[in-house]
Image (cartoon, rainbow, N blue to C red):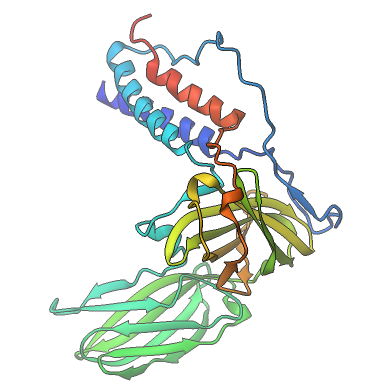
Length: 355
């Protein structure tokens, strides 16, 4: 019986996650290089739909035993409560705190650590980042005690052919190398370091991504208050047309405020994309608003196509002359699809155990 319950809960959770994470905007057709350049930007906008009549019954769960239904209801209730809480904020403008490391440092490389042969210590390999954009150099550091020699061997994960092999500079119980970017690096890289530690051989293997840039953020076009949103329009130079997602973190001085996300279909050439910060994540006033931590992503449009990334010409973008008192302080209103998803979850959670 427990196995059946687990299967049912897993299936329900998968269905719910699919419904919640599917894009709110209409589905896009795959973009090809021959796409016309006009219109250059097609902004995605939520279509307002009238609320469903109150008399419409909530979706019902499939027939289950009382025990199965109770367990499923508990899972659905937790998910429904969590989703209801997220709807306090716009999906394009989520609150950000110092604890959100994955958003504050989305390209951080987690060092790879292995024990020494005699188990008396550890050796760690660290890169300066996880994802690189050509022609960025790869910086790697090997840390530990009694390192006498080290070399790095770089190849593609899907190809055993060695692209580069070179020695690391050893000094003060560590070894360091900076490898210049190469076009041969494009793809998933395997970075293997072989070292002598206290006379014993040690091998550490790490992986990273090396990308050909698909687009580049080039500047700020404008920043203005529009209703309940602070709208920030950025300029891009697009090399590869497609559906783009741009992410950035909004700060008030050194204090993180919000994680902003925008998605739009962009053509080749000079384009624009607009990030929005809803009033629910903004202070009543600020003289030091700024955007940081930019991620430019060309999303996969067909199965098997790699997601590609772009770059930013700046690491920080000050937003000046913004009067937050002009914001309309209305709460965020979920769109029709978000309301339908919440109704579905609540219906599952409130399903009666007896029919």
